[in-house]
Length: 260
Image: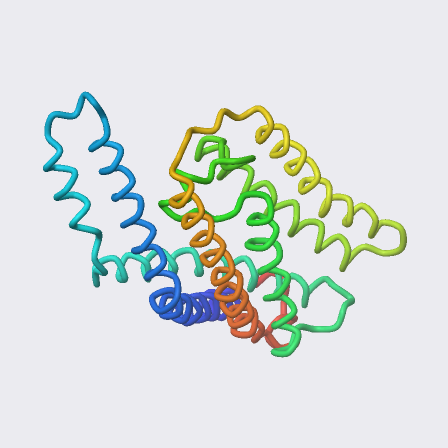
């Protein structure tokens, strides 16, 4: 059974990561290139207006050379997506196997695998991005309110904590009985409330640098588009991942628990 679990996880992870990479290449990568170009233009403009700058021609050259699409970048994106997807798929397949072995709930089917994928989407994408929205290169300069003002390690820590607590909350609501479901709901909601409060405090206490209003507005629009496309792309990704992982039948999952 362990061999079947590993094979299914690797297979599901690779196919879903391939789909994600293709969709990202069509929808998200062009936005990132545009955002990187705006970041480069903003940096070069700030150098050009710096009174201590004695070489304005360098800023002109930098502004004229925005980053171009690269096959190497696509390859690295696929590699990263595949590694991450294998991790997600292993977690989902292992959890499904434990569900079959120890739960009295209905067994996982291909159809219910979509529900598992939706739960993963909520836990590992929707909940973290509600607390800390994903950033484009330009938004890192112009949009620094709330939790975005934290250092990158702290943002990653908060992202991981929200993902774990959300997954635990969803599991608690589904598997717990009676009033114990309320504990799952509390675990699900409380981190969001704490981070929202913290983000509000950071927004009020932050010192915001002065930027060109037009650049800031464009960065905000780009970030909103990036976020919207990210939600749709990752929804499709997680549904496919859950569907592909839901392949354990009762005869495969309940032979002998020592096989796990």
